[in-house]
Length: 182
Image (cartoon, rainbow, N blue to C red):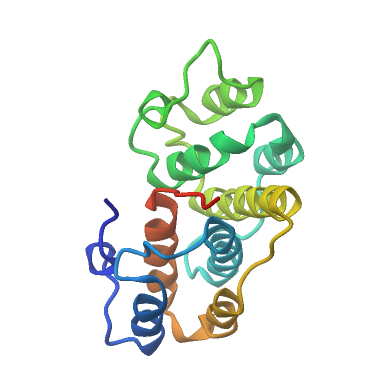
């Protein structure tokens, strides 16, 4: 069961959050996976650029990881995004193991630690955006589907969200359990 938007600190006092809850449900249970990835990619890119405290210049390591994202199978992209957002639990918590994980995961652990705790916030947010974009592209190609008009409207209204509301919405989207429709 998905947690309600309020669990992540999001309030219906913001008209965009209220509209999101009305459109997709308080726990985003009616949100299609392709819209989820579209929103994460756009919101995380915006948050990366908007942060008052983060270094917006990307590290060499982040750029290398972006170049190698195709090593991560589609089902693991969401888990890696969750791990990069939280960075307080070892990757095993998110379903990665030392034997069956792609070499890229091993390299990330070697660079940033077992929970990726050494990854700078700005790099993590940008990489989440890149992973979500890769997942969106995968679904768009596989399902021959595109983001909905409602998801596009949220992106067009993202200026109504504070920096922290963007982060909280990204977290809610990342933690959303996927249910693919036939």
